Length: 407
Image (cartoon, rainbow, N blue to C red):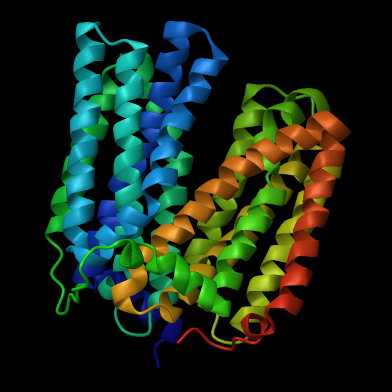
């Protein structure tokens, strides 16, 4: 008798809509990682100003903050694959603009800022629509594996993308933009080729009520609210990765190679867990497993903070990445299953707003607490705080803890 997990993994990888969706996510995520490296190098080369680098992140985050509810409504009101496709082609045009300016040597920081705004706007529309597509492109009963593979595409790109971007930029500043433009064009073609049997669309007339319906749904649904808020506070407190340059230089006394190894650790753990969950999905006690993974993330953060050996620090970061992937897969699957299809775009938009806010604010929180208490103490406090949040959420949302299966 064939192994059931292996058969399920093979089934989802043979499923044509998921194949196209997955490849589109890979190309899009690779482009985003390559552009991040190229833009960072180019802005700093033009300005030698760290504040100018910070402005790039701000200009990409503000559209998400301002357009969350509009983009969520668009994902529910229009054909989701077309929303994703148009966003990716707009990103290709922005990358082509940067390539043109870099090759002809007329590109300024202002031009890069303008392209960064475009990337921020397109990401705010693309991500909720892409997330809401997952239940439609996976075979019935394989949502967890589909979510794991979709998340794994991002982590694979985060490992290989920056290295590829740095290598291509060393060849010529315009080369990485040319490649990302081609990748985004290809991703748009792949997404546009997806054929779905059923594509329900919201028929509601756009209004403030329908635009903010996702936020009302999250607030009124304890399971969804608990899941999304757990991510917000756990990531907010457990932002040790923002302090990696300090750990590499001042605590572990290693060089750039060590920093690169530390940065790769979480993604390596997440990618490894992606492969495991694609073959061996969690079939029972998923609620308690989610909380256990968050607790393990907090404990690994404390181990990382106290470590004085590079190898132990890398192991702790790998464990952090793997445990976070378990939590991410369960959280995203729970949100998708608890949300009606006609609401998934708006709820996904709220979820991504929480994720982006927690990442941005988590880096800020880590920097502030490190300035107040020291780097090691701040990271220990963050890890302990993550464990405390998980234990508190188990009491505040008992129904979430008691979820038995993802079905």
